[in-house]
Amino acid sequence: LQRVTLFRTKDGRLRCHQEMSTNPIDEFKQRYRGELMAFEKLVTSVDDLHEISGYAHDHFEQGGGALKVKITNSGKRSLSCGLAHELKYYFLGSGSIYRLEAYAKSQNMNIDEYIDFLKDNLKYVFELGEMKVLVGKEDLTAELHKAHISELASKMAKEKKLRDKLYVLQRNFNRSPGLVAEGRDMGTVVFPEAEIKFFLVSDIQIRAERRLAQLKEMGIKRDIEDEMKQLKQRDHRDESRETSPLIP
Ligand code: DC
Image (cartoon, rainbow, N blue to C red; front, top):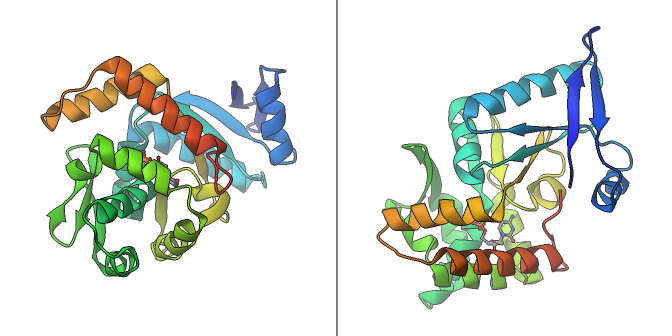
């Protein structure tokens, strides 16, 4: 994807300016049949997301169609969880749903029973600028980000049967007054009716550095080259799979 800028003209209307003529964006436009309206912004705080939401609000007021927003260099989990926290909305971190299944498998638990259990016992909280995953009273955040769980989750996420079961669990999070759902297929498969869809992209090195810092806090040491290699492999697997691939 390349840069698409949404800007406001002097008469207050929103216009879309595109600075590209290469393939990825054509493909992107084809997928959305010309509905594309997006802007790119460096987001580092929830305030930045509020600003985007402000634009989005105006855009809808003026009868605009689906709005896609590309955001660079941000931590998707903390941003989206922080936004939910600010709005007092429910939050769904869908990556952790797959990670929890990997965790259950690694503990030889019965997956179907565990999914059932999660329906009433999985909660997200926003604490010190981070998303935390609680199952019952247990904080599983650190456990879920161990390397073997990341690997297994990415492999299990390819299974259509499992995705179908998790679809129901995820839809269950859609409660009043609203939901912020984070994850690859949130806007395409699980909540296609979502009003605002943010598409976050970030540089692989920055992602690896962020992961290393998180792991360090958890007392886990990892080499940056290894982390980048693993991230690339997982991205490739997530983008090229048949069911719910990672697409804007
Ligand atoms: O976002 P994450 O790294 O926590 O996600 C963990 C794995 O789960 C990732 O390898 C792909 C998978 N996943 C998915 O298939 N669909 C989602 N909506 C979210 C995550």
